[in-house]
Image: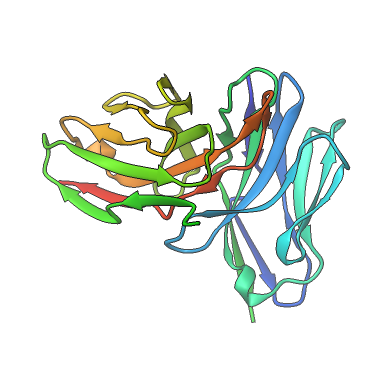
Length: 115
Length: 115
């Protein structure tokens, strides 16, 4: 069985300061992990993905995430927040070997960026 | 290349009515999904399909039906609409090679209200 927990439902940062959005996962097999971003009244857009290559994954718009198997974590970071980063962020896990394409979404973290 | 398209964008239904949400993708993806997103929550999988003629239930299938007669189309049918089905519905698609799940591409969503 697979599950994902986003540890913060809301994160607020000032523009220009670092961003950390935390995600822990549970997976019976080798997981694929994803971060998606959703701007208000929009669909979801892929930020980055981990699929067993490098453990440090770089994505779009300066975001990156590190896969830590020992901690079952896949936290999303960005060195310097921009106003346009304000959005909802979802961590997603998928067991690659068994689940025929089914993914499990976290409940989301709302990122607020203050000027 | 339009990606994933959904119609309609908005719909208001009365209790007991039925409707079909349309979803089409032009990326030749074999996997397609239907999710619902309730306010403040992540996405919950309703149904998914791994190819034409093959569908399976997700986490929350009750009250819905799907079919997949072509690679491109994956309509979602609501029978006897209930207020609990008020939600935003997202269709997504992905390709999968030997169970190695690639990222999902999302449509813009359909906002459904049942009163």
